[in-house]
Length: 124
View 1 (spheres, rainbow, N blue to C red):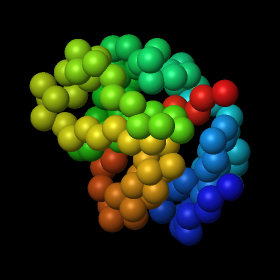
View 2 (cartoon, rainbow, N blue to C red):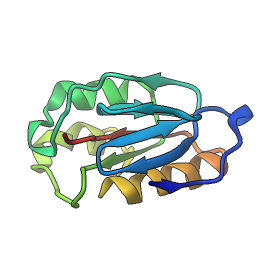
View 3 (cartoon, rainbow, N blue to C red):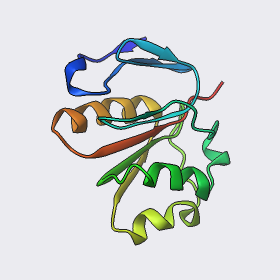
View 4 (cartoon, rainbow, N blue to C red):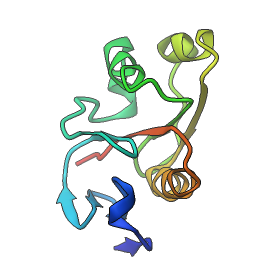
């Protein structure tokens, strides 16, 4: 399990992750979720990047982020642009990366005070 330094007083921080789980403020989750500095959606029903559909993106957009990170699982996989075209249309930055990179990037951006939201896919 990889660990990141955290300051739990500042909001939701990813404190550890591995191929089948993620820990947020020390609590372990084994399902896909959405994390933002002040909100946590614990049951994001996107179990694989191949299952990602517009309703999943709409849930991420409901957080009103300035930047979106999607952790695609153990490997970087890009979905069809039609799936995330609404993000682009709204002028919101979006990046896809493997889940480990997404966790690290989220923590950095969150610590900088950015309005970042990460959709983290945990594949079983």
